[in-house]
Length: 167
Length: 163
Image 1 (tube, chains in turn yellow, brown):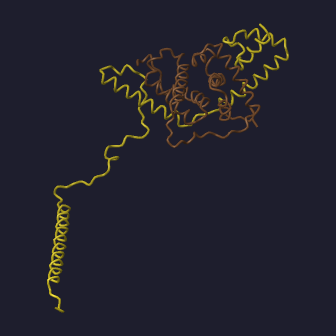
Image 2 (spheres, one colour; image 1 turned 180 degrees about the horizontal axis):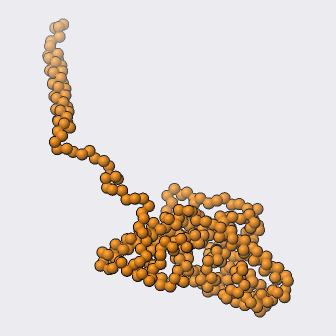
Image 3 (cartoon, one colour; image 1 turned 180 degrees about the vertical axis):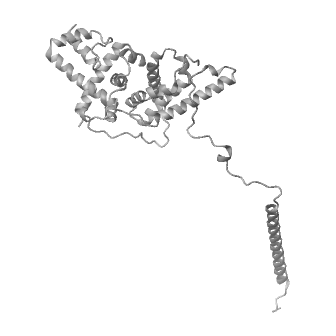
């Protein structure tokens, strides 16, 4: 193994994993480094950097609600799979790991999320009567307006037929 | 999905969601996209992975591979952003190793080209062996080592050169 190959093996060796079986020639490279203080110092520097950077990257933490969100979504998918299996005549009870279906929010009864409509009581005729009265008043108002209009037109006609006094 | 094939979903999420999130964050440097990728990975597992994985030892590499493929798929898809608002990212800051926190460590990774970033992130997250990393990104171990070496050199330059 050349010094260059040994340096490469040490460089790519994961920190604190001096026996990594996937780095070819690692054991031999370490032996070479032990006889070469400069190479050993370089390796120590690299290991220091690798440990530090690895620690920083592993300090990233997921948002606290992520796990719960995933579990809810996964539970829904499992639940849907179970329904499909049942509808196809399979035996979903073979599955032991169906997580509990815990939806994000409790499912509301239908009456809670539908807009509240007024209840119609067939015995209660007061509203119907009121509506009829209103319609009658509107019709009456239209008739009165029409009569006034006709009278106005008749008066205009009469005024037009009167001879001018100067004649 | 039979009793013997499946694993407890809740335990699975509790065990792996943080490490998967870290991997997603290292790739994207974006909290929301990282959350989406992590969620989507578990949903894919819930949908079909639970039945497909019989060996629990393969589970972790499978999750990382699925997340990585999902990341590649999302990256290739056109972004639907009618307002054209850029994703919120933290401003650049000094990147001396001693002053780095998790987010700035991911920002340093973001400056490294894509083909080096993925193996480097997996290398530093230390969740997978080098062979498993090679399986995730579908490359020989020797190529992974080459990319890790190049990426490390670039990362050391970035953390040293930053103001």
